[in-house]
Image: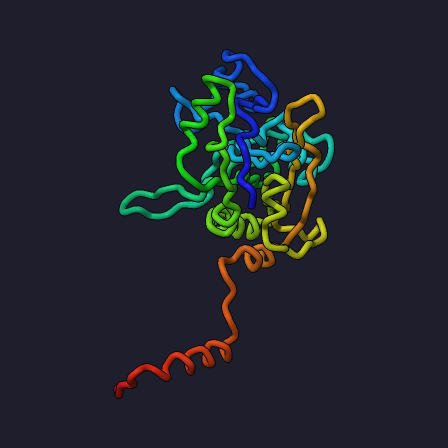
Length: 272
């Protein structure tokens, strides 16, 4: 896979020249507040990496553009014209820790359908950005802030394997069964480059969907700047997601016995 270059810094397309003040603004336009990625005082404000026309998101806040993920998911979950609220970072599990109970299993957002300021329905929304591999990107990032120049040393490979089976799958395994038991919808937001790298997951009808994927292409516009496109919606069952994202596939028992037969030929047996 070809290493990608830093695509967006503090929401700004790095292919478009920008003043030092704009490069160093530290402002996140997607949340309309100071960027806090990697620290409040010296944030590492890389939103995405890109090969030019299509960006791969590395910061989950990048998906907050125009708040559309909340509107898109809530429309599917509750229908058109419903009053809704997005409640961030809700823990949905309790475990006993000595004499106390501890809450775990934090869901990124609960989308809540309300009437007369009362919650009458809800759905989960989880956001997954992509990890990158390699050494620290801080020197290349700081060089861009100071000079506006992108160094070749700033290129990185996206680590889809760590982002999917190693990171996303454990999160879903902890949370999806809860919402499945409640009969509530569970949405996963990713970008189109990430979704394309996931193992194939069998599709399902919307009415039976237990895990609904919203895959957004982050496309560069003709005059510069990246914009989220309408999502590709994929409805799936949890069992199919779990099977597809499971790390590795177990062989048949007969194949394992054949393998062991070949291995023991050079081993000294013992008697119990």
